[in-house]
Length: 408
Image (cartoon, rainbow, N blue to C red; front, side, top):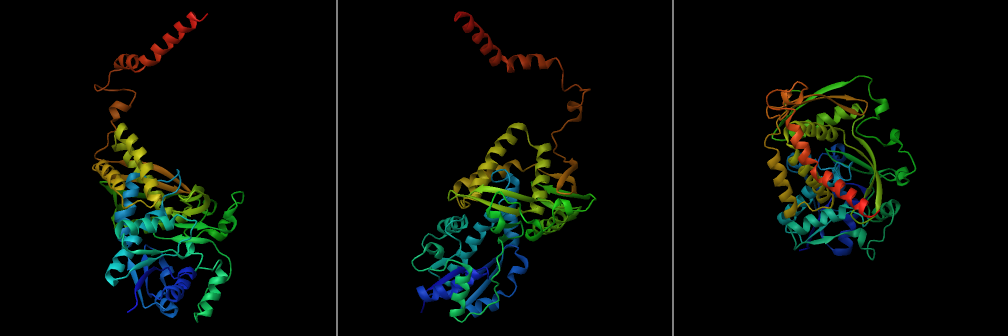
């Protein structure tokens, strides 16, 4: 009986070519596993394609709700944004994919997992760290790093390889962007984006929405309800997190929300440029942040901001299954106990505009904040506070003045 390998399968040209390549070079039985994180129509026709390519079996595993509840929500609660812009769309999806690949490998008694990530990107790290953390005994096959046996260097090479192995599939020779899509976002790399001096061809590029210039000349009003930091309703209608993100993607996309053009620092050391569309995620992150403004005290906000940045880096680097991620997430979850309330927003030509926020746990006190303060605040108390708060500055200035006199 042949040994089995689990192939992380998207149905694209790379992973299609990998099926006969794995059989030819390792004599494996190839079991394909496609993980549905919300790719939409990209999943169409996979069963026939995998079978024609020589796979013995295909799993299509739907983890959309798990992805939203167990990976997206913690990142939203943490305010995790990589390098001030990237909302971690691809990064968040890799840990649950790795987890599911390991589950299928155990179920099938496979000895190895194969992925098609390149040797230059972040995904090879994310997949492999996840697999190592969950199944250190499994072999990992990364063809793009095995240049002695993986000799294909282009899309044309892969197509010729498939044809030579009797696989005639409808892949186009035309150039297109390299894309990664799930429910949270879609990323675009390649073509003109490889030149940072070039403006993105948004007419050709965008998938989830339009540019702000093409958005309607009318505001779209929405409201989001949160309970303990988790979104539970959109416009007053109770929904699952996945349903809320789906609706927000449509609303945000139509209003030109969530398009970013970023040159980011990859884990492997190089800079890369990409355009990301994250319409629903951008709205959700902003709404959550606005609610926290009312509820969290200053010191907690400051610490959460620091840890949120570290959390983003952990996720970006593929270190989800680590004690540090668990520890930071535990801290974040403790801060969410009272993050409950409703956030109203207006969407307009790429902008998210505040329209009012309410919470039963708001720390905002109108009496304190207004110019006509009440009994809780006496203006005279500020005298002593400022004297003590500014004492180090005053003492230093006095000492500097004394030193200046002595040096004359």
